[in-house]
Image (tube, rainbow, N blue to C red):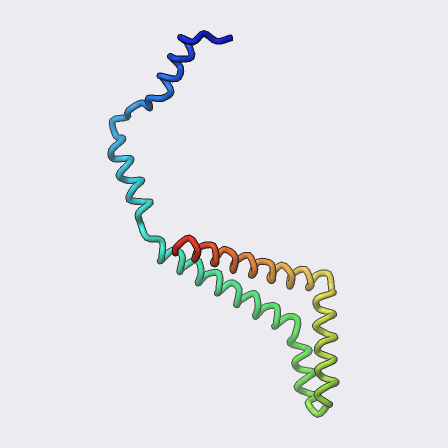
Length: 126
């Protein structure tokens, strides 16, 4: 069992933080960094995220649907219902295909995550 005198001495030593000569300057710098507005940084990060999302969407559409769109435009005289069913079948094949389906679901999951971050940030601000 520890001695009460020793424990009291330990409590006394740990309750008083040591003082450094530049403590005031350090506190002022930290306070300035915490008080700084982050609106521009948030806008730049958001704009970069939107640009990356648009780039990814264009790439997915360009790689997956360019040939399908050419076929659809070439065979425009077909019945609209058969075109719609063919497009739905192709979309289903895209989602079910292991490689492309994973990319699609990953993009959707990241979009949901980004929306969740945006909502929590908005809730913190108000």
